Image 1 (cartoon, rainbow, N blue to C red):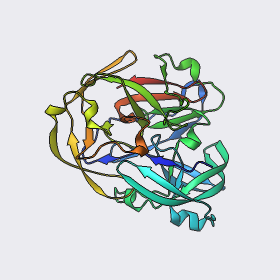
Image 2: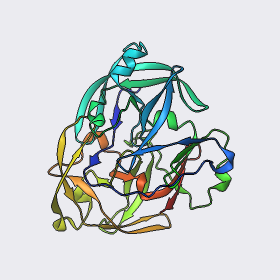
Image 3: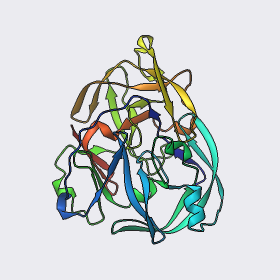
Length: 302
């Protein structure tokens, strides 16, 4: 059993606006799953647990593990198992685990999934009625397309979507011996105009703005400005946020100009996120395709 978990997402008071329209089908005639967007960027998906539901779960590619709110765990009579640490952006907490017999989205099912029982009341404060968070431990079993433009999720275990993904294949960072990259994390190399070296950023559908854990990664540190922003994570604590200089971003052959980045004020990166440098919100893209089996991403700009 994995004894160290990470919850990456941090929600800032300033968000990235999205323009969305309806569509009903996925590439390769794959079944589509509707996404409901709350607060402009948070993706809510209907999930069945142990043949019950559906329940509203937050789709969060920045979280390694699936989380179940204690109220739902009690309804489903899930038995608490091991105590495990939960680490995230600027916080450390403890939780228990529970074995799920089955977790399903539409016809897509994963059996015998270990979930974390952790209170989501702080995320509910953002006007959500969440019963859980859907993490990468479930999503890694499929090719995945998050289509922000058409408000849908496409999951595929047959490789039917891959021929339609014509964009540049961006290799995901894979763990090596001695590396602290979590095994099921969507981390890509990104070049920022204010950084000397490429940075490792996690593709995170649960964050509403690009974020660096350690602002000193930018050589233009003297140009930082303190903004009147506050952010909150899964622990519910409010944190002061620094607005970094806007960055020109290069991901493979994709280029983005003047992208706003943020960082926590007065803190350095901790060991819980030492395997990567920050978060890149999936909201930056019209579509994001992830091939877990072959470890690459195809990102389509808006």
